[in-house]
Length: 315
Image (tube, rainbow, N blue to C red; front, side, top):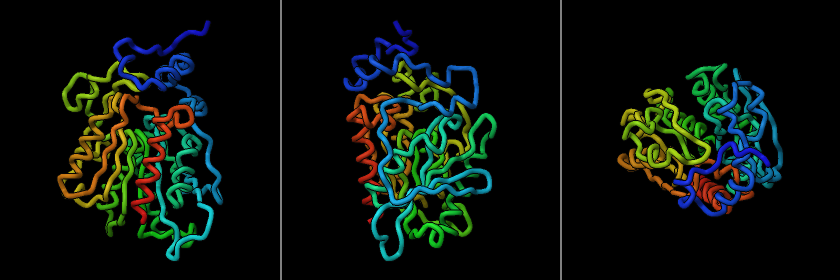
């Protein structure tokens, strides 16, 4: 009999989405969480979680080298609008340590096909080899590259740039939306799309900064690990004058995720400046549902909602 490496805690079982609970009991509990293993960069090559869908077919996929990282560009089929395709700059999750350019190709292609845009997935530098703020630097360079070269190189409309990411990638995307306003001259963005984002790296189960850390400390997959308070690590602490200059937002959070409340709180901060924000809470769901969209209906719904929000923003 296989050993259960992450059995569900009895406290969380009745609160979980039934489809997720079934999948966890059948498959997920037997997987060793990579962050619990002795560090080896090769761990990044294993799928983070099973249950994800395959990438959708796009017109083309091409990799480009930037100064310190690579970007992968997914282009949609069909004729581009007169001014070029809208563009979505995306950052994968993985706690700034795990994940690769291949990790979330399915999500990137879903956005390309279903939102009618070019998607630029950023293979930003990862810790522990590359420490903060190098990933932030890569995010900024990716935006500047898209803005300065995208029209001629990618056939995009640089007046329709959106940014987004999942988990730690959502953190980088939120920071990038702030950095875009700080750059001289600023680079205009039309939208930011954050899925289960990290916005407050000071939160943990021992304080009241974000109650969901304590409420969901027995949840599967993600558990507390404190970090920094600078706004380019924790965007929830960004100055008012920068937050006020960021674009409309869609934020998807999972009810049983320790990161739930900081995603909601970030949306509330944006709303104070009149920024249109749509926050969607996925009931009874833990952190990694986006990556399980083939197996879990609630994961598929999240991807559908994200694509619809992005498509609407580009119209």
